[in-house]
Amino acid sequence: MDFSLSMEQEILRKSVRDFAEKEIKPVARELDEKEEFSYETMRKMAELGLFGMFVAEKYGGQGMDYVSYIIATEEIARVDGSHAATVAAGNSLGIGPLYYFGNDEQKEKYLPKLCSGEALWGFGLTEPNAGSDAGNSKTSAVLDGDEWIINGSKIFITNAATKITTGITALCRTGTRDDGRPELSCVLVEAGTPGFEAREMHGKMMWRASNTSELYFDDCRAPKENQLGPIGDGFHQMLETLDGGRLSIGAMGLGGAQGCLEMALKYSNEREQFGRPIAHFQVNAFKLADMALEIECARLLLYKACWLRDNNKPFSKVAAMAKLYCSEVMYRCANHAVQLHGGYGLMKEYDVERFYRDQKLLDIGEGTSEIQRLVISRLIGAL
Image (cartoon, rainbow, N blue to C red; front, side):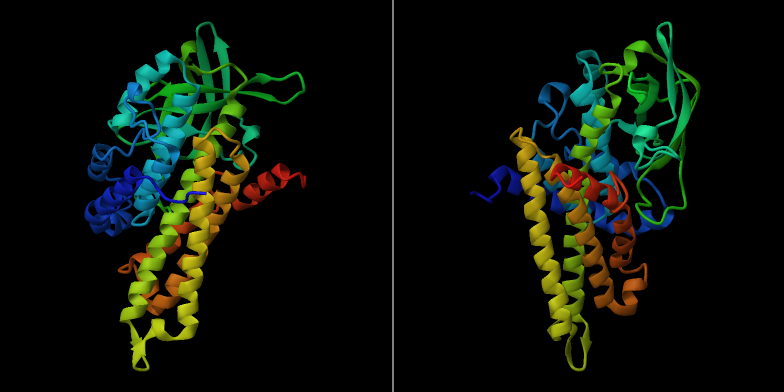
């Protein structure tokens, strides 16, 4: 077994880490405080090639493997969760469905600008009453001649209300199946379509510099050709999209945990009590050791899931495990890091405070920790 990364992957890690330290870290705290999405850092991330990383070059992508994409997401998350969320959602949820399920015309129309970072795209799945129970989506799409008429709403949708958002993929109820269950299909809705509105959400505890929105459809008409894949294939598309999205959320947890460890290690070696650095006290040294141990385990699990995907092997179970474990590892690392900082860890002038807040979304987004345990239970034959 070979656990080493390729030279290209090592170069990618270093270049993204250097970029994050130089371009994102100096502005992350201020953007979080202002709750402001930065088009400047978005442009710079695009120039670095952080969008369309796994997309074929003929559509404007980077043609990289999934491990490379996850490494890049991890390194951004090591410095800031909001920017990592923009990258993760931009790739896995925005570009992913179009790339994997779109026809040639749809790919050629939308992917080049999304891969260049000139544009963003949202994934309209979650509704006010359909979160974990995503199959209970109430947003409806009725075919009227050559147009879909869409009515309903979505909530907590990333990247869907920026000035450069060009559209969203909306999961809609398009009928009823023979077994009585809802028939779900995905429809592409472009920004500016009459009857479609995206409203930016504010007052968030976490990812405050990431764009989050509510979507409203009021007799919104989308061309029939904007249907993504076959009618009734929407739930399958959603599940496959979430499988990939879980890997990027896992990368955010892993990167965030690494950032917490580095901040805690630096602070505890500088902070002195009773005449010596607090890292020298066994109770604190063991916290740092536990963080390093869990991060190493999380990285191995996440990279294995990505390797399985890259090699066209079943990866859904390991993806759920990686998302669950990496998210909870970041929780434990953020908790230890704040504890090691003491009262300073509660102050916004220390980045560890932001990491502590940002972690919580990882337990909820892309399927809650409870749903991941349900998925894993089913895949191991326990349910």
